[in-house]
Image (cartoon, rainbow, N blue to C red; front, top):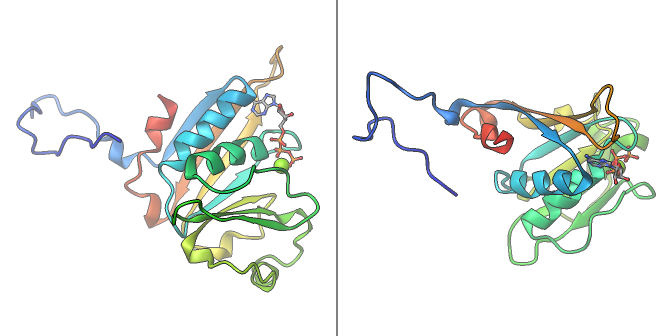
Length: 184
Ligand SMILES: Nc1ncnc2c1ncn2[C@@H]1O[C@H](COP(=O)(O)OP(=O)(O)OP(=O)(O)O)[C@@H](O)[C@H]1O
Ligand SMILES: [Mg+2]
């Protein structure tokens, strides 16, 4: 991954400062196919680290699981990511010592945090990347910091495959993040 030039870089002209991408903590990406959604997941995985919470918001069939599939591929975890409909959470261990992916379908999780901890997942959440579908209003308390990903179908879309994906990094964790690079 490219490192942005330091502010004092001799190459930078002080008269025409370029805005620092490091401060971007929100981004909007237009995704035009399921494959592109997967690619976005792979790219996003490069920015994730152990302890991160990713909350996915979007209607039925928006593409939450498709994005998570790309995340799993990008992270390098075991097992294909599928819809966790019949289990509340599925753990995908990392293949070579990195963070596991914990994929949660919070739809039937009534109480939120307490139940999540009661699931007895046999994995340490601070050492994992936790991705939650249908978690709005239920899992925010798991962490002060979270990446909220909102997937909307484009209105008036004729192909029915266009999605507008908005990423909002919330909390100190995301303050210096480079989400803007995902929109490139
Ligand atoms: N741009 C796109 N991104 C993602 N999926 C798309 C896109 N265009 C079409 N699709 C299709 O929409 C469906 C998305 O399914 P997916 O399981 O990822 O949605 P979901 O948001 O997880 O749904 P659920 O709420 O049921 O869990 C797939 O059938 C996929 O092929
Ligand atoms: Mg899903």
